[in-house]
Structure formats: structure tokens, C-alpha cells
Amino acid sequence: MNCLKKGVKAMAAKSNDLNKPKLTDTQDDKSENTLTENYFAVSVLRDFILPDLLDKDTVELLYWAGKNLSRQLILDMQSLPELFQKAGFGKLEITKQTKHSYIYTLTGPEVVQRFDTNNDDPEFSLETGIIAETVEKTIAAYCLGTYTVDSKAKSVSIKIQIDRN
Image (cartoon, rainbow, N blue to C red; front, side, top):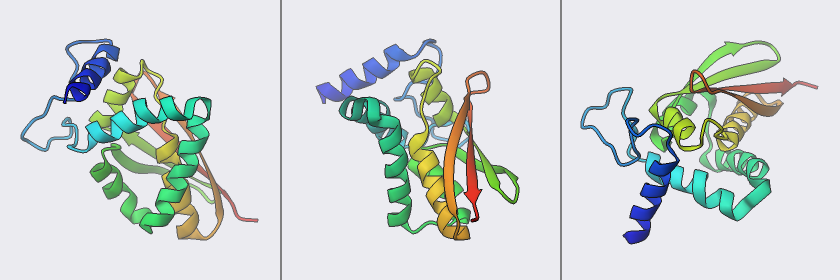
């Protein structure tokens, strides 16, 4: 239990503003500003343990891990928002769709906390891989995902490029 307390303190110390919600803060209501129960476990793995283990290959390996996870979970595009909410990734919405791409926006208290914990430079390659593979399976065309963070709005734009050749 001591290691857990130290991990929470280290994560809280990385946050720039002590008045922002901490990983251990919970609320009884299920408002949009409440961190999901699964957030802490996901955050510890993704933001601390895996980067230590994977070092410079973190981004690429998490992207491919996300694609593999999507294959194992047998997801479709309609199930993505619910999966993201339950997994503690945040609120996922499709914001634009064209013949050649889909653009998703990832927001919510989980995303804000990741910006706060990671000094406005969080990575979202795991989530991008999950979406890319899910779209690929759903539409039966090769897809490649990229993401862009908006530090000011504390949101993420995930673009899934479709190669229909």
C-alpha cells in the first residue's frame, strides 16, 4: 500500500495546480466532471509504468497495442464511446466524417487530468490505435490514426485516415 500512496503523491506532484482534482478525488454523483473509477489504474499503467518499460518506443508500441486490443475486444464503431467511458479514457465523439477520414474528439475529466499530470504533453497513441483498428474492421479498409492535442482546450483530436485502394 505504501507504493500506491507514493505513486499517488508522485502523480499529484506532477500536477501544476494544487486546486485541480487529484487522482484520488471522487464524487458520488456521475456528472461529466467526475473521473471514472477506472481512471486511476489506467493512468498508472499508461502514464508511468509503460513509459518506463518501453522508453523511446512507447508511442509506437502503445499504438499497436491499441490496435491489437481492438481486435481482441471485437469492437465496432458504435461501441467506441461506451468503451472509452468505461475504460477511463474520456468522452469520445465523432466530430467529422468524410469519404477519406473520420475525426474524433476526446474530452472529459480524464483527458484534463492527463494534461495536468503530464505537463500539457500527454500522449494518446493507445486510444488512437483502438479507434484506427475499430474503424478499419468496421468499414473493411486500411486505416491509419494520428492525434493532435489541444493544450489550451485540454482535448484531443484523433484523425483516422482511410486508404480505400
